[in-house]
Each structure stands twice: as C-alpha cells, then as structure tokens.
Image (tube, rainbow, N blue to C red; front, side, top):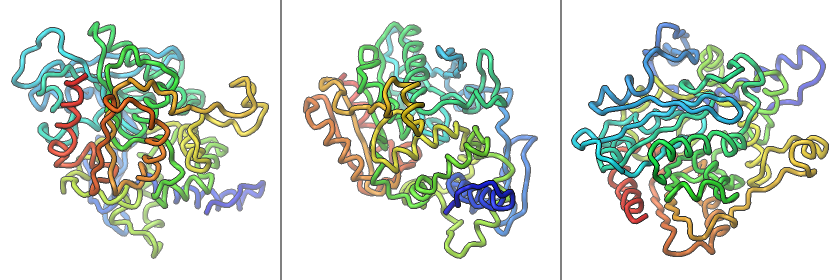
Length: 427
C-alpha cells in the first residue's frame, strides 16, 4: 500500500518508490519477454528475467496506415480532426476490403480503443482475426479512432505533451470532445450515419454520451465489447489495490501528469517487483485483465512493439474514483468548492445509464473471466437499462473470455465478430 506523502523528504522518496512499483505492476502486462525491437531510441535494461527493452513515446515517420494496414494489402487513408479544445486526433480509414471495390455509400463503422491503447488495437492480429480488416472485407467503410495522448494523436493547436496542461483531462473530455469530433468527422466525410464499436474505455465514453442523448442521431448502432460502466465489483486485485491506495492521486501530486507506461523507469523498477515472492511476473496480463483464453502465442511480442500507450494521470484518477465509489460520475475534484466551480453543484454529476434512449440499438458482449469488465458489474449495467426495447438490444455472454480476448482472441472471428456484423446489417 502506498503511504500518505508527508513533508519529510526521505519518507516522500520512499513513498514514491512504493507508488512506482505499484504502477509498474499495472503497466507491465507481461514480463516474460526477451529483447524487443522497437525503434532506435529504445533502451535495454538487464533484469532477473533477461533483457527487457522500453521505449519512449516517439512517433515514427510512418503512420498507422503505412505501418499496419498497407503492408497487409489494404488501401488506407490518414485523416485528422481537431477537437473544440485543440487536440489534433489521428484517424485511419480503410475504405474497402482486399477483394472489394471502393463502392459508394458503404456504411461507415468507427472503432474506438480502450485506455492505454490506440487504434492499432484493431489491427494487431492477422487480417482474418483483426476486426478492422474483417469489417472492411465484409463491405464496411472502416474508420479507426486514436484518443488524445496516444502515439499518433499527441499534437495540439497551442500545447505540447511536455506542458502539464496538455494532460489536464479525464474521460469526461473524451465524452465531451474527442468522441463527438471523431463521430461528426466521419459523418461529414461519408454523409451517412455510422455504426460504432468500442472496447473497454471505448464503451464507457459511448455509454456516457448516449446517456446524455448525444450522438444518437448520427450513430446507427453501437457494439460494446468488454463493457465498462460500473466498476465496483471489479475482480482485478491489482487494479483495485491501485485505486484503493490512491496511487494515481499520489502520482498527480508529485507532478506526474502523463501516465506513461513506456518510460525507462519501468524496466529499472521491474527487477524489484519480480523479487517479491508474491508477484507472478510471468503473467501480469492475467492478474490485471483475467485469464484470456485465446491469445496467439506470439501476441505478446507484437503487442509490446506498439502498446501500451500514454494517458492522462487525471484519467486514471477518474477511473479509480469509479472503482472506489461504484458510480458513473464526472470527475470529482475532491471538494464542494471545486466541483461547484466546474459543474455549478457541490458534487460531481452522474451519467445516468437509464437515460440511454430505449430504442437505440445496442450489441453488448462480455466474458465470464474478465477481471476489468466484471460479470457482476455488467449485470448492474444491464439492470440499469432493463427497460431497453427488447428488439433493440442483443447481449452476448462468453464464459471463457477475458478482457483482451474480445479484440485479440484468435477465435473472436468465429464467436463474436459474425454476430456483431449480423447486428450491424440489421440496423
């Protein structure tokens, strides 16, 4: 547990080390790895597990289209949109499949990744297992979002990522700015209402927007994989411990506004974590997300070439508040005066799931082994929307699936995606 920081410098330094160790547990999804090939600025540190390579967040010359899509034989376009608060977001478009023509009036689909990830989420597996490519091959016009602060969305009209104010946001701002900017951009480019697919945090921001009756006039339907809404029952001990320790809050008070998993400190502190007898460093992904049943054996190598990505420490605080309080509310500034300043009321306003329009088409898919989107939390969500029109909601439950299986599972192309596509074609 992180101790409370005090004015004693030595104590503060010791607390920082403890906090940092806990952060690494959360960020190092799998540590049973050898040397990784990232880019020329990578740093290799020798630990008890062998060589472990970390890399700073440096955007390569080639974007996602050149590095991940065109190499598979697909046409790809790079787009960008600027949010109302100045963040310049990268968007990729796959307008057609490998065998199909660029026909007019294809229905657009927007894919939104989760926290500590970016749009590459949808492209990491082989083409016949990656939802981005599968949708394109099934006749959809595919658009891939990248949240502010991730590798290809780190620009701003006036700020840089080295400015603390660049990181002054939580998922509230993704609801208010990023998601509307991206959805409206796709809508304006295609002149058509679009389907939406979200995973993890990508579901949370959609639920929040829909509960405010936002975007429901421009989105045809939404597929929500590993849905995140209520988090009180989360079964990930690591995530829950971090939240209950106020770990992100401590980092924020130390001036760490960017929650960056790819820094050199990760490798340096990794050895200390793995010395602890209770830490299973061979499979921290399972400890964090649940026992994923169906990841390709080479998935870890590919994943670590591109992920995880940065987010705002304030965003992690917001998620921790949800875990501790069991609510879906806007960011709580910690006192009535600050909340009043931001919201005009003394407490953070709630996102009411029951206000999602009952006739808005929803496809919800969740897993029995998911430690982050816990079954009990999903049941609480479904209870909150129990009055949804029966012909407008499809709920899929896969007993063996954990959090990552929905986007990286080798059999998701058989268990999840065909049902998702069929749902889209109905709407």
